[in-house]
Length: 455
Image 1 (cartoon, rainbow, N blue to C red):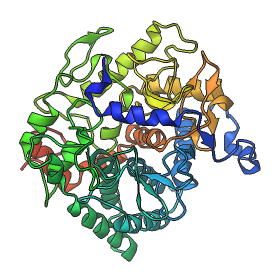
Image 2 (image 1 turned 180 degrees about the vertical axis):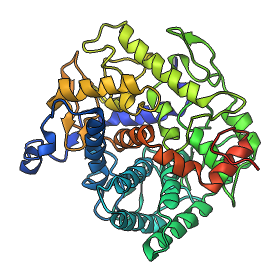
Image 3 (image 1 turned 60 degrees about the vertical axis):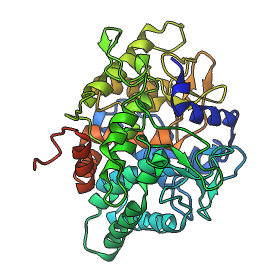
Image 4 (image 1 turned 135 degrees about the vertical axis):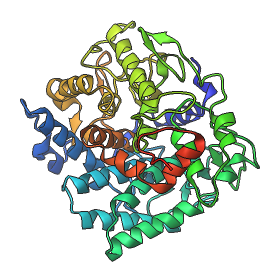
């Protein structure tokens, strides 16, 4: 399988630049060292363990949030020598959803959460945007774009989709009549209506493009063709009131590629869409933090089947362990993009470096709760201090190389909080699927869902 067929290749290539990152906080810091939450607690009930993991992981988006913007930092270590000010658009969207979970579970008060999000939204209203679309990275103090690669210094449509998946949930959740919640909803609405989804068809082509830059125009040249993590981008582009895209963009762009339909079996499990063996497991997470795959179908697939089977294939591969890596097994599985002992890679059964990434199995709780719980207990109780830290589980580990990351990444921590919550209560799924614009967009694209009211 060759990832050059997708825009994922570009992201993975860029993130190779982060090899051997420098940590901004040392593990010996007294405040962290004295943190009682770092002591491994044996014999916790399933519910208590899920509480602990969600709450600890949420701290990445609260304790470690950028102090000026309130946005999520890209990672817990310094990336590409940009310093400590790099905040991430997509990871912030995941963090918004984690903050909603925290408010619902009363780890923070509702009012505190709303005020934090309003500060973030006010920052975004003044930040760089390109036809309403935010860059992948920006400076958390100034809101100015920080280029993700040499020519990626403009709008990033996929990252913006991840952000608004979270902001739409926030607008649905914070539905109170007080000034803070009213302003939060209104300002999210202003930004939502300013996104020129149709601009990103590059003059009317029947496909969406990932990037546009005022300096480099369309030179990045990444059309968004499935199947990968960007389904949410097409759903939101069809959901817009002011600048929507026609349905042909979905059917003739996203759904037309040589890696969209699959239909083959791997380990006796049928994979409807995508690359052989499914690719990195985050394909089943990022678009589905808000978009509920339960009963979600279109002419191409049943998305619950797609995501569950992709997860089961990923786990079956780890149990098979054809490369005989240390640690792999029925309780230690999950291959997805993350840091590794060499830098960063899109780990999957066809790009297996011996690296297990906790977010892969933990964000799969809705699809494989029994298997995910076994993985969680192994990660927490058996590996314990090697991978458990102030913001939950570290990004990844490789027992063959005796390597355990010190880093945390926003795009990996966020789905853990959100997907565990969707497994437990369906909170984010209910919020996102209740939004009028989302329901309209799904209808326009021909989706069926029990959460779309019949007209």
